[in-house]
Length: 433
Ligand code: 5AD
Ligand code: SF4
Image (cartoon, rainbow, N blue to C red; front, side, top):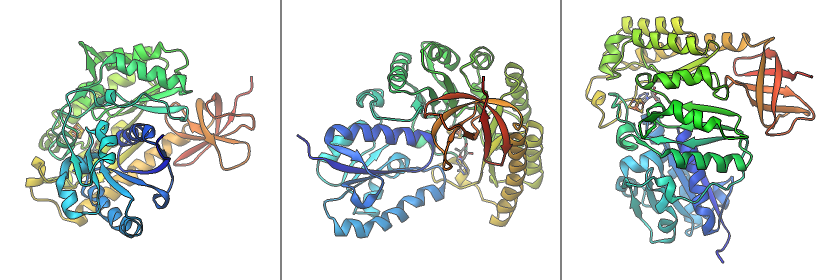
């Protein structure tokens, strides 16, 4: 019998880390570990880190500093660093922070149980040849009705600013059959919506077939009602994937398609390998397939060499597309990437551009939310709301919706009419038949 122990996981960064954290928790369950909400009563603390921008990376060291008194008071407590900082910095973490017991890179999670059992100061940052998820236990944890499923990892695009091709490695697609069986496991546990994840999810392929095909195959699973995927690169929006937005009613009308900049000069310097016009034409094709699709993007301001004219081009592109939402970031030089060699812009310039861009995005987001008032949508209830008789879930367009529905249950998929909107959420009433 294994002794019951507690595991606390803190997840930083993207949804792929959220998925990885779930899988790590499942990998530790046979070792007797169950999840706890607080580091104070944990026997093992895992920090699942993000390396995408400097601030994200530095967060690890400040959080480790905060854990130090806990470790001093409780020397048996094990502290592990996982994720992309672990992958990128490896031994360096142990040198800076000897209080850390183990460092496990984002591709080595199947080694986690033996590392926790083993001696202190273990570091594992190899890239295995097998599907790392295949080496982890089957899905079994209790979960909500909307789940993530990683189908692809890594990236071969080498955008000049980005560490992902170095931390997550080359593009690898998980085999179709494994994805389908994991999806069936999830559905058997009550999951009704699956978001397919990948750094470059639309580059997924198996035996010559692309993501459009995978979506079609997943849509055949009874009980699986909704599909989404993220994050996509414009150059990998294949025809069959665009067609899936027209032909697969289970595929939600939502697409995160980062463009980063609207200036051809900057796009070229970023090594994005497409122009602003290419992107706009692509959007036209996607909207022709699915007219009500909601588009979102990522933007970087203050990339080395970005002039005011370049920034205006980005603002024009945003005006032209009309986004439902977007993430925007000030450029952060990442050691080892080509862009990090170039001189950066003054902080004030980048800060001012970021504010201006965010104001435009917020305005567009508000318009998209307001446009829903009076319209019908379908909501998947994920939890009870704060008010009595209220349920909370996501609309088809991934907007948060509060529904007044005293008989509603988590997991219900309910047709509603939107009654009010704010920038970040909608209010709605079920449509009574
Ligand atoms: N600086 C700022 N933002 C970055 N991103 C990736 N690398 C950097 C960087 N060095 C942003 C991109 C990407 C998102 C996940 O993070 O916009 O799409
Ligand atoms: Fe990074 Fe570009 Fe790959 Fe996205 S496509 S993960 S931004 S290198």
